[in-house]
Image (cartoon, rainbow, N blue to C red):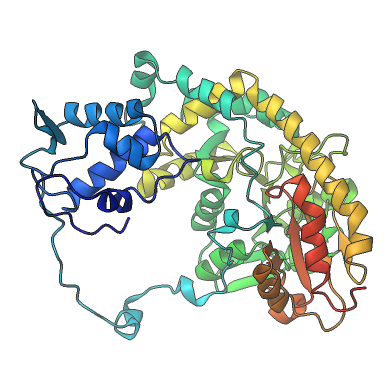
Length: 500
């Protein structure tokens, strides 16, 4: 918030207060909460100085276009908390003894060249995924990995929060768990989530993570040294490639065809391989069952550890076939399974998990404790309750039907609106992998489409050699409303050579 300091101790012109509360969001948090936050921020930063008089509740309500009770409730809570003080027949004022302003710090300016020699690694020097932070402001967000708030089960999630907010429940999750997870969430994973994928695990074979990203990062830290031979997919998940490149001098690009990774000599010479066999990232390829069995046999023969990133596991769309995951077929314990609730529920939830043999989990638990002790237990307990009440299963059913409908809408329109493109989306995929005509530069297409309100992802970032993916792009459909799909594709098609 950018406020100008209000210095006078008495009532102020309406325009000043309108400016102070200019950022109220009518569709955001409760207005009373926003008013309180604004006043507290103004006090703590010195914008509202000691003994500043606030407008009467009726006046401020009129200025902001809100109910008087909304302002009165905000004022009363701030009086109770000591930020404001009410003086009989005088009004409401900023309480004495509050900070006058944040200190003005003289920053020491240093250049990147001065710091660079001190860095042990340079993550910023690697090619990075670039997604607009303000994607929600665009009318046609064909982005993978974001969610449509209209699908989120708000009321059921609130019920789970309320159920975990009693004094007894808070006492249960509020303490320091050291390196343990919430036992209720582990139990729900074991009973309701993992069996759907054919995985049956003991409690000691599961660890909760802050999303699949942390799960993959911890596995790299645990297994990958400077001389470890690591196999990665190409094209593949950019952050996975970057994690591995920072950890080892021996990165190996696995051989791939339209079904995914091949169990060839390149694969067999790896110490560990990171795979997305359920829906290959980014092509959506679902690896056939016989290929999965061949990979497991080769891994067992050549002692290759397999990390299965099953990032789209839970949300199989209604009526589409499901192939058993690698972990469910593993008879020798060489597969480490990574799952997440980000794609099925909400990316901001940041809860994932690893299923692995107990010795691996024991080491990961110590490693995680050194990094952050454990993921927030309140979030774990809310999710566990959400699953236990049956809300998660219902959400998957309802969301699957919605996304299947959207996928079919895109399938029906692509031949007409993007006639010069080739595309694929294997069953259950939440995106389309599209190859444009010769000469297409998807990076330029992303820029031009964005100017027209259409967001897509350029495909070059997924390739070790960006030139190999210059004609490709990814089209997601989890974040875009049904009613915007056709117009968004129409605008996109007009930018691709050969249109019409």
